[in-house]
Image 1 (tube, rainbow, N blue to C red):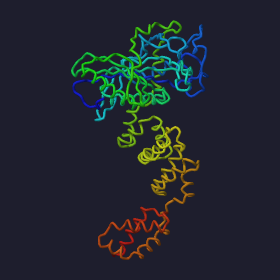
Image 2: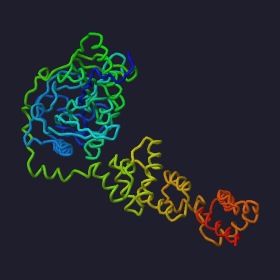
Image 3: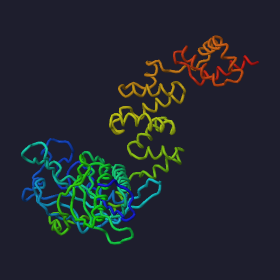
Image 4: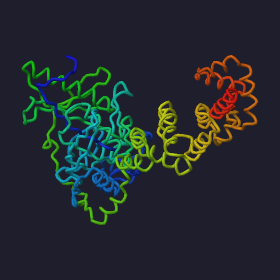
Length: 487
C-alpha cells in the first residue's frame, strides 16, 4: 500500500457514530446494576435474558442525561420522542431486538466545535443523539472451541451521537472524539474510557473527486478501541479507497474491522441499511415527554463548560492560555485546582505545580486526579511553604514525593527531611564571611567585573550550610558584604 499523503484528486468525507455508555446506577430498562467489572452474568434480570412477559421500564436518568448532552451541544430537544425496536439476531442479544430510537431521536440538529492543528475552529454538525440499550458481549478468546456470552452489558444505557459527514481528515476525527470525551466527562454522563468500552466509535468514510457534491460509496469501520486507532484506521481506509478508484475499481459498501495488530482493515459483512432492521415503535414503552419544567431543571444541572472555564481562568486568575487550557481540559483536574486555591494556594504557583509535578505523578501511575493521594488542602500547604521561601523548588518536589506515601503535612515532612531553608542573618552571616575570607582571589576577580562568580560564592555557602541556607538571602548577603570591601 502506498504511504498516506496529500492527494488533491479526492476529498475525504467522514461521519462518526459514537456510543457513550452512561454513568447510571442501573440499566436502561431493568432495575439491576450496570457497573463494569462484575463477574460474568451476575448483573442480569429476566428482562436481560429476553424472557417472555417481561416489561421494560425506562431509567429516568437515561432520559435526563440525553437531554443534558443535547443542551450542551446546542441540539434541539424533542418534546415527544418514542423508542423503537431494532430487530436483528445475535447470540449476545437474547430478545432478538435492541430497544433504540429511530424516527424520533430525543436530540437533533446540534453541533460541536473542534480546534484544528493551525489553531482555527471548525464546527461539526450533529445529526442526532438518541437513547438505546447495549448488547451483551461475545468472548472468543477464552475457550478454544466455543464462544462465551456475558450478558452483564446487555441493557446498559447508551447515547448514540451521530455526526454529520462534516469531518474531512483523520486528524479532525481525532479532535472531534477528544472533544466528545471532554464534554461527556464534564457533564458527568460518561467516564469516556475507551479501553473499558464506555466510549465506542464506528466511522463511516468515503472519498469523492474534489469539487463533486455527490457522496462516494462509504464503508463503516468497527472495532476502534482508541482515538489513535480511529485516526490510523481512517488513514488506511482512505488510502485503500484511493488505490481502488485510481486503478479503475469500485468501492463496495461494507462493514470492515480494524486490526490494530496488522494495522489493516478486513471485511466483516456487507453494510446493512435501516430497512434491514425492520424498525417499529416499541409497544411496551410509552412516548418520552420532556416538559418545560424538566427542561429547565436539566439546564440548571449543566456545569461551567471547558471553554467558559478556560476564559474565566485567564481573566480571573490571570493565567496564561496554556495553563488555562491544560487545567480545564479535564473537569476533575480543574476542580482540584480550584480546591487548592480555596485552601490558600496562589493561582500561578498552584498551576505550575499541578501541570508539572502532579501531572507527572498521574502519568507515571496511569491514574486520574481522583486517585491522587495528596489532598488539595495538603498541596496548598506545600505551596505556602515554597511561597514563604521556607523550602527550595527542588525540596518541594522531594516533599511532594514523600507526601504521596504519607499522610503527614508538608511542614512536618520538611522538618523531618531537614529541608527547611534558613533565612536568619545571625546563622548565615558568619558562613558568608568565612567563604569570602577563604576565597580572597575570587573576591578580587568579582570586584574587577567577573560578576558570574556570585554563583560560586552561593554554592560554597550552600555547601557549608548543608543546603539549609536560603539562596535568595545568601545572594543578598554576599552582594552586600562584597560591596563593603569596595568601600
